[in-house]
Length: 192
Ligand code: ADP
Image (cartoon, rainbow, N blue to C red; front, side, top):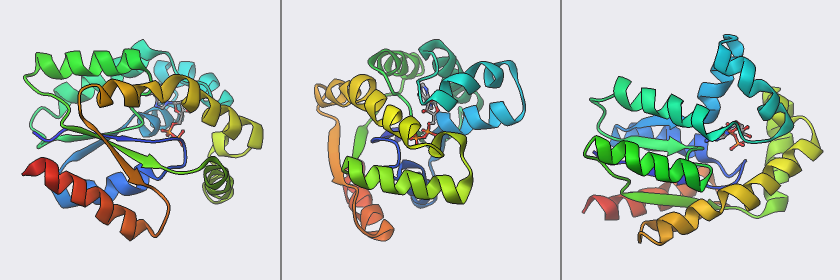
């Protein structure tokens, strides 16, 4: 299996790039944000609980998202590998992910961090809010809160993988296809 974490602040382009990498390497994208939005749309108990956190730009409790990922690992046991998108978002989640993979004889091969400055993130998310109608992209203060949550709670996850020698930093500004090529260059190195 090839298991990758696609990492970066909100608006870094993780979802966009994950779609290309999924195709190219036959991996399965696991986006906790997409799964939570789908749970909200279906009004499942998870969705009902997650909605408030997401609309305020806060993180959904660790045990909830860890549970969702654990179910996916079982459901897609035959996958060639996973691209984790938007997960892990806290060090607790990262530790749990290592544990869940180890239990299955697997591990994370690399974390790919998309580096994008905050002013560019704000611009992208405001635009996405207008185009997609996503609730948490509608309001500048909610977006700024998500960026702050990233800085405070999520960024330390990069140190966790860096300590394992697995962190790759990729410039996330430029044409989408250029950024895809940068990511592919790293993944091809990991595959060698
Ligand atoms: P973005 O990267 O633009 O913030 P996501 O779809 O990844 O978009 O996440 C949207 C929201 O979903 C987050 O602000 C958070 O409330 C919730 N969420 C997604 N993934 C996680 C996670 N791993 N842990 C906690 N909350 C999460």
